[in-house]
Image 1: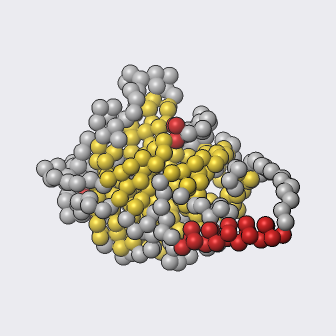
Image 2: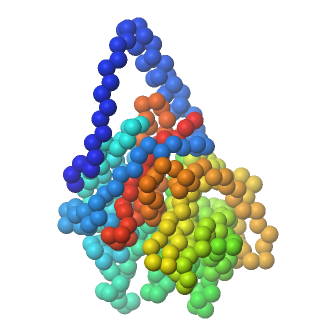
Image 3: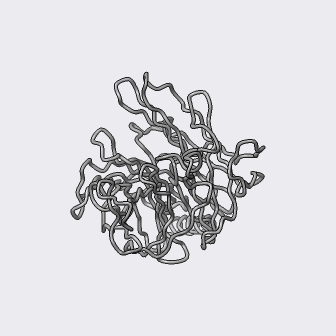
Length: 390
C-alpha cells in the first residue's frame, strides 16, 4: 500500500557536547527505569489518527473489517485481523508496518496477508457455501494476539447461532496454519432449548494474554442469554471475562459491568453497547474497550467509545456459575481512562481493537487502536495512536 501520510519536523538545536551527553544519558536512564517497572495506564494522550482508504486492495484481498490488532515488540511486527466471514476474501489477517512518533503517523504499510486455516488445512467457508454435513465451517474472527511465549498466534471467532456454530478459540502458526483449539467455557455454548449461551454477534469479541504470558483471557461482547438482558438507554448489563490456562482449563471468570447506551436511537432503530477488546496491563489490571453504536432516524450511526481500566482484585470468581441470576456477585471494578468522544478526534468509528505499541523515545508506552469499517463506504478504517502518560 502507498504511504498514507508523511509527517516531518526538522529542528536544528545547538548544544555543547557536554550538555548533549548529559541529556542523552539522563533520557536513556529514564527510559530504562521506565521499562523495568510493571506497566500502568492512568492517563493517555492522543497522538494521531490515520485512515486507510475504503476498498483498499492488497494482494488480491479487500482491506476492511479490521477488528483486532496485536504488536510484537520482539520483532516489531503488527498483526491486524479481518472479521470477513470469507465473503470478500477468505478469513485472514494482515502483517503491517505502523510507524509513528510523538508528533503523528509517518506511514502505514501492509507487508503480507495470511489466510486462516481449518484443522483440515482448508480455508474457512462462507455462509452461502456452508454445509452442516461438511467439516468446513464459517469463522467470524474478532481478536488476534501474538503468543508471547512462542512464534504462534491465537484468535477468536464469535460463532453463529443461525448456523449452529459455537464461538471458538484457536491457535495457529505465524502463517495461519491450525495448531490447536481451546474448549470454550460451557456456559457460552448454545443449549437445545435456545435459552443458554452466547447472543448472536455478541460473543468472543476480545482476548489478551496475561502479562506473564501464562494464561489467556477472553471477553464476551454482551451478556449470555441466561445471565442478563442487553444494555438499554436506562440500564447497563453484565458480560463475562474468562481466564484460561494454556491448555484451556478455566482458571477464573468475572462479571464485567457494561454501561447503559449513552443516547436514544431513532424510532425503531438499533442501539447497542458491548466490550470490543481487552488488554492486560499487569498481573491484575486490564484495559477494556466499550463501544456503543446508536442509529439515528436517517440510519446513520454514532459511535461512543470508552477505554476503561478494570481490576480483578476483590471481584467474585463466577467460573462455577452457569447463570448469574439469583447470585450475589461483586463485579469487576472499573475506572474511565478516556472517552474517545472527548478527545480531538474528528471522527470516531467502530473501534474494535487495542494493543500496546512501541515505546516512544521518552520511554512512554503507546496504545494503538483500530476501527472496523464493516466493508461499508460510509465508515472508516482508522488506526489511532495514544501516548501513555506516567
